[in-house]
Image (cartoon, rainbow, N blue to C red; front, top):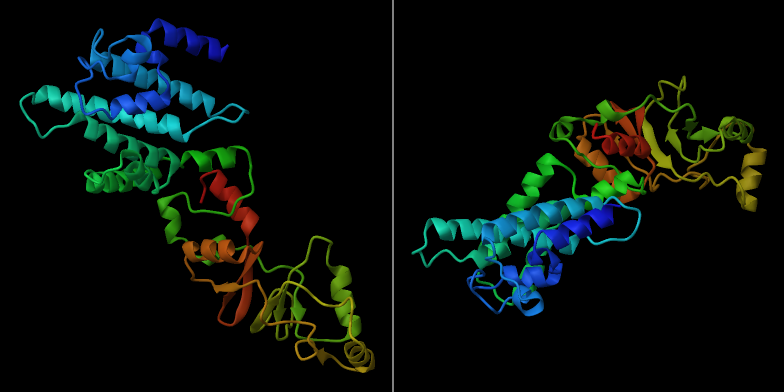
Length: 336
């Protein structure tokens, strides 16, 4: 039904609506008067004119219809394009602005509507896709660097303005489809948050450095199946207030003990140092941050180390834990 409505709109609003995105981009980049030129793709393919009935009307109607159609097609469950339609829309919008300036100052040779189409295409696409590489694509597409400075500035400004208003198209689709992703800061106010604002209480399962075989078995038996990372501390009078944190371990090598390790654990009447026994590593993949670390650093560490959680310390104590999944959920709902 949606395709039928858009098709009827295309055929009923004039021949300019029938042109493809690639041909549309070529026409918008032409450094000639579109109202009188016979070198356009619209004239060659459909014997139509951009000036019939009026250039500004044709460009305005084309932009509105294609904008709505592109927005609707981006939400369907079938593969579709985003980059080329956005680039074409930006070219139309830029050409419309350039033509308006040319009409306001008809005797000015400085105003080139095609140049505004190039800049508009780059800026609009950068805002929609959230990419800066569009500037390089424009240079390769036009095979000239005349508009290098305007294109680069427009890409930066377009990306910055779009970032304040909404997420880019690819990020929006990824969140809508609940695709795996790492957390991100979506609100300007979130950059003032620190680790202590994002953390949860200290996890229940904490391993002290010095253990006996029986106490180690008790800790592992008490942990649920979903617990695969244990914070390691020197010692603790209680689970909630451990003392100085030494390190974090992502794997506890209990299975597959060597003969020496098994013998020392079996013969040890008291607790042994699991680090010296090489059952715990202080050089683990998981990292920890100070409670006053900014949220941007927390996001960076989680993304770089691909860790599901990040432990928070303060004054030599383990005081909390930050879960990556919790940050992802909050950022998806624009609450971070």
